[in-house]
Amino acid sequence: MEVEKLSRSMPEADKLAFTQLVKEHERIINKVCRVYTRNESDRQDLFQEILYQLWRSFGNFRGESKPSTFIYKVALNTACTQLRNDDRRQRNMAQYQKEDNAPDGENTDEQIQRLHWAISQLDDAEKAIITLYLENHSTEEIAEIIGISTSNAGVKIHRIKKKLQTIYSHEQ
Amino acid sequence: MSSNNEFDNLSDAWGKMDSSTNADLAVMIEKTLAKSKEPNTVFTKLKRSFCFEIISGFIISPPLIVFALYDRSSLFGSVFLLSIGVLFLTLVSYYLIKFQKIRSINLIGSDLKGSLTELINKTERFIVFYRNINLYLGLILIIPSMIYGFQLGAGDPSALNSINIASIHPITWLFIAIFLAGFIVAYLFFIKFYVKRMYGRHVDKLKAQLSHLTDEETNNP
Image (cartoon, rainbow over all chains, first blue to last red):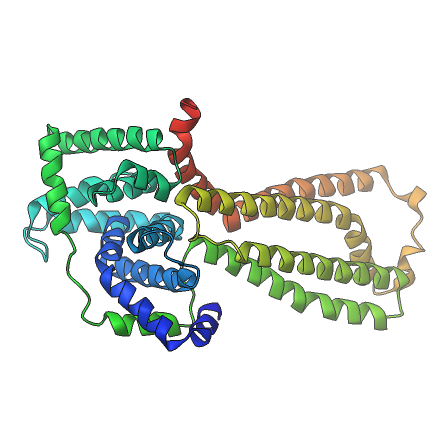
């Protein structure tokens, strides 16, 4: 198992540094998981996948980019390439909508629930872009993480915002 | 939501979202580093498919080769089985090389577009090779397989020599031709379906994502 070998070969100090990095940026991973999954079980799976991929690439992280940029790259790449089963996705969607319509849940903030619901209507690439935008990343940073031109990133952000507005207006 | 101000309010809502932390994060990290199961990514699924075929090839090929070398009753049968065994082993070796290449893709070192592009390109090249080789192999092997099947069915290796081709009724030829045509059509459909099921759907999903990223640049270069 590749990651186990890596884990054994890495010095203890690196493991501590990795744990520290994850602790400091756990919020980012949580948000990406929340955006790309629709129930707690999938969320846990994706969280672990992201941890696995982070660990796998941690040895190559030389600090050329900001740690948060590194985490976002890994988290979004993992979320966008993860295996999805369409049937399971459909079931999850129904479950997600059911949960959202419930009178009260763990998350009582209606605004946050609406935001989640609206973002869940976007495709995976759009989710990645809006996540970075809502995290106050500049257009240049978004372009770098996604791998598109700055102008394209700007256009996409504008379009996604309009799309979200449409989704909200249909909801009301 | 009717204005940008309202969108900004949503940004505030986003800021409040999921800021909680896992009390047992350290344990989770330990578990992740120690767990023996790889995550359920498209990449992992492809690797699993390759592994399945590589292991199948390694299990099937050696017995065929051994049987072909020891069975002296039919020269045709020995040559046929030996060819299939060697062919399987060659293919399996090629799969191993391809597998290593796909395994080496660094999905996380690049940006999202770069990762998707690399994964799609490498996987597509493999799929084209895989589909073609299975098609050609099937078509090449069908006639020898029928002859070998006839020998086995007759239970006598020399049964083949006793057949007088000229005496075969035209209707029998017609049945053989219809059977072959039917088999080839069914085989083509099966290979297309199998490849699509094993690999194609994942690539389609990745392509859809990539196109969402690149459409604007294609429209406005």
